[in-house]
Length: 123
Length: 111
Image (cartoon, rainbow over all chains, first blue to last red; front, top):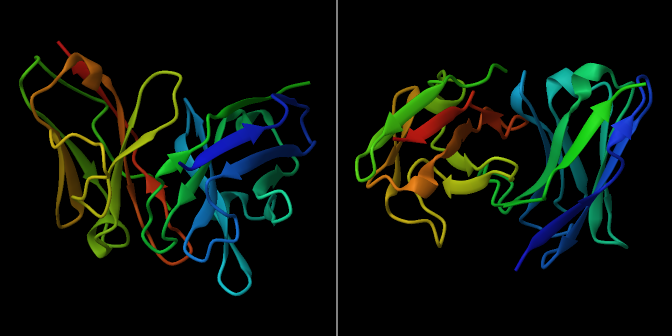
């Protein structure tokens, strides 16, 4: 049974970096079929896909255009997890952040989700 | 990439059916048979209900069904039950580097 467990701070100051981690059990971050995603949800902006990382002989990343200049998603094969870093945050980045698995990176399915982390950007 | 358009709310009595629309463009919904639907109860993560327009993952009741015509996808919930009261989101592939574009969400109310 695949599970995703998120961790990271719930409060980040403006202009600083938001960092979250998603630990994987029951699958591998290096799986040749899957992609590992970050999504966020806020009342004003709804659900927004932020980006993903996946392995196909080498590591690839895709990022949403609206955060491309500020985001990094990184795998950690030694801990079987992946992380999100979002730089230069503003209050508009306040949201619930989710990690999720796409079991077939070309099929646009999000079948397993983390529990969500409420992140507030405030001084 | 703009969000897909869904009605804000839909309602029905127990046992009835409700259908939710999800309207996009030829660059997303209309261009690929890669539409999925998610159910979200308050305070919980979204749950996959439908993928590839009309396929159900193991464990999802056959009361939930999906379809697509042109740039509009639809989710039908038949035989409404109290536990179906939740928010529902569609999602579509929109190109190689845009795997997930979400809809605006629809709150289903069981009267």
